[in-house]
Image 1 (tube, one colour):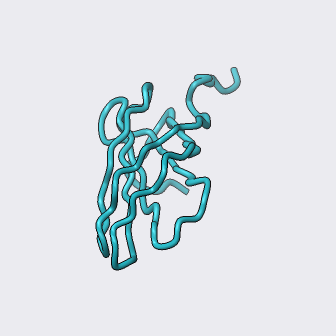
Image 2 (image 1 turned 90 degrees about the horizontal axis):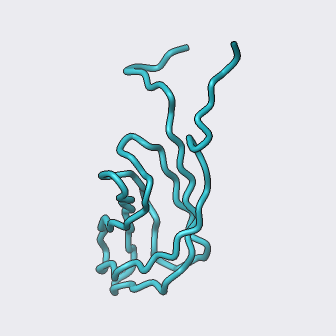
Image 3 (image 1 turned 135 degrees about the horizontal axis):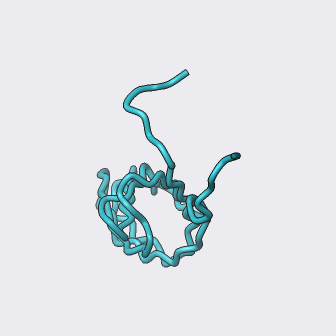
Length: 102
């Protein structure tokens, strides 16, 4: 029979994100609309440039069509990054397991 593959299970897309200011010595989650994302999707975000003191910590799908990214600021002043085109990798598993299966 072979494997059945849903062709939109994974991919990479380019997102122009306007990240809001991140306060000094803190972290904050910001949400962005990305059509097609579903809760449970695995996502990874790649910031295209270095910005001293700014950390892209985690990314998740917080709701349908919503990408949530946590940004950290390790400096003593606020950071307001410029609009950039981030890469987003998404993956939708056909099956998930409650525990590791080896």
